[in-house]
Image (cartoon, rainbow, N blue to C red; front, side):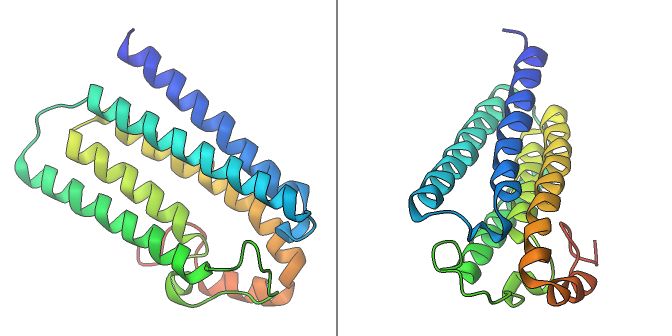
Length: 183
């Protein structure tokens, strides 16, 4: 199959499936309106969608691998690792928030710098892999991923504003949505 057709199909899959995730946030204010079974379903679907997108991206990057200077490869790996660490830091900071809603806004850890650290880490990690592989299409994928995740973040934030009100609005003034202010 043609590399550009594969790229188009992977991008299409990413856009469609991540918009399914956005439905989760639009369906219920703060995710707390779901039953326990519905939460398990949506979280499982979310994990499946993210996992399949990651696998497809790795597969694509392996096909669009181009020789680049060692400094670009090292920089790419460092960005990828930084992105992963940021994702795990965000997950660690949230710990129980998915299944045990405490109605407490988390603004510590990576949430001090960015409102959606796991999305930020995903975009940085994807761009790092594209840099490592010398893949221009991978860089384009990273840009589209940033746009799609920004849209999902908007859907998520509707529920967060409804749930936390003025506290979330104030928080939004201090932490940027997807990329830290210094960027």
